Figure 1: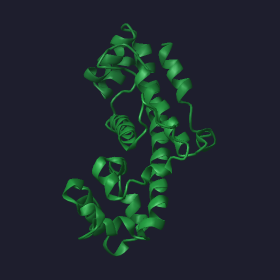
Figure 2: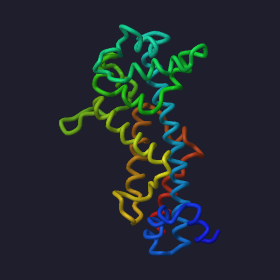
Figure 3: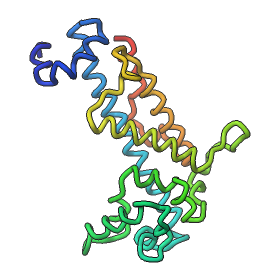
Figure 4: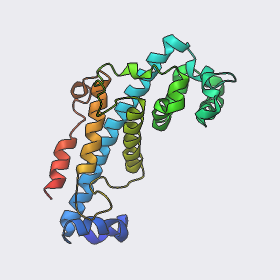
Length: 227
């Protein structure tokens, strides 16, 4: 496709950043746009795998402690999440239960919750509501030191970063730039990718085996760096 046609479809405003990053080379601008799409697709797939692994680990941890319908029960009147300090968390659960209605099952409810919900399981009040046991899902978590505390807040902050890049990709925003600059910079994508790999390791999951055939992020980012 000619650049003029490509730009018409994607919009001059959207393509301006790619064109500036490649010194006005229209062919390279289209290549960069396509590589960014490939990187976004693969990273989103990896995030999706991580999201499923995380929610399953949380569910497996709480099932024997809080029962077969732990999430629904926690949001019901008198449940552990109904503390006002837990904010909208019980409302989110109750709305999902209502949405499912006769199709309710515990696995269906778990699947209804989005990444942001699972992140908030490590927020201060939600973490405390379930008696502060959730870090047990990370058997390979590093030991805290005076310099770094690998506590629930550390996990919450990390998940917030992953959720941020997940939403960025979902809204079709580029991940091959950083801090609003027009120059290519894959540091943002690399940092978040490494964070996901670290958390897979903390969960005790062999991410290389899990993501076999799916993970080509490093190769794609290398191509972006050398445009």
